[in-house]
Length: 401
Image 1 (cartoon, helix red, strand yellow):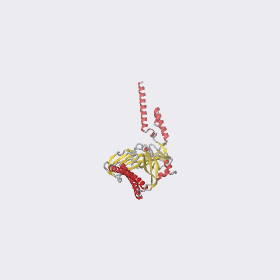
Image 2: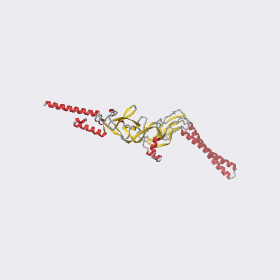
Image 3: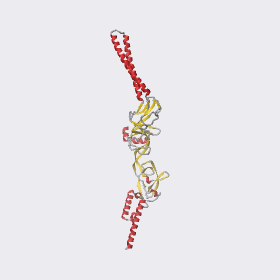
Image 4: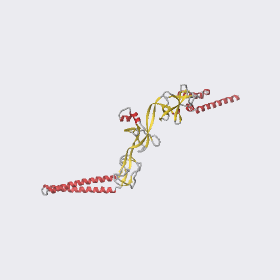
């Protein structure tokens, strides 16, 4: 009795060990991706299809407006009202230029206006008195005409004084340099103590409107023709163009998508391309004017042949696949591929035709002229699940056939 128990225990232990080995074999074979038999290889028929592709174009980022801030009066900078990179509002003070001389000129002009007004008042009363005396024949025509002329001169002097006052007031106001729009401040080439004037070579700074950003890039003429060959107005063509994405300088993809809103009407003969402009929202102020990026332009390629990248073999920068022949042998075949790919498949330019069948798994174990038993992906899947079922039911004799 004890001997039978021991035999049963040894039999159960052997069965469990064999089951564990079987599971490890399946695992080592990569599960579903593995070859189910010694000569069985999954093949796939190559047919014409469409492919969603992405193409990148170097681009420059610019604000909707990059406004140069230049002084309109000469003087020394006495105050910086904001810091570089600050976000400012329209009318906000940016720089203060020494107002001393302009304040003096303004005070003088204001005094000139008051003096001209007083003189005009005196001459107005004089002209009225002279007129009454002239009507009574007390004074001559010449004396009355002189009074009229003096009054006209006083009016002209007041107008001149008021013009000088306006100019002096404006110049005094120009001593405080303000932002002409909402935006972000650039760098400051001039600091406190620098002498500036309207003729300085560099602007005091730049204010960039960055609520929305323009992205400029060059687009090949051939690609543009493919997008616009359907016809219609330029506005209709722009509306049909797909949304584009932006790859930033650090390689990350900008979260917001952009829309192409302008196409140059002139083709650059040197490059054979046109200038295009896309607009991107910039609510988080991530994009900055003057930055560099890549525009990612999506498009669909029709009637192309795709092969899985895992089905190719690389030798000396060349791509090869194993093409199934009528006698179930495989032929080592070189293919030409496009430099575009979606990360999973290659676009075949030459070497295959629609209807060819290629091995798509286990290609590293194949050799030119090797005879195989081709199976489809569906057959491979069915065999895999049957093997798992046989294991779970303990049919070890059939689990690895």
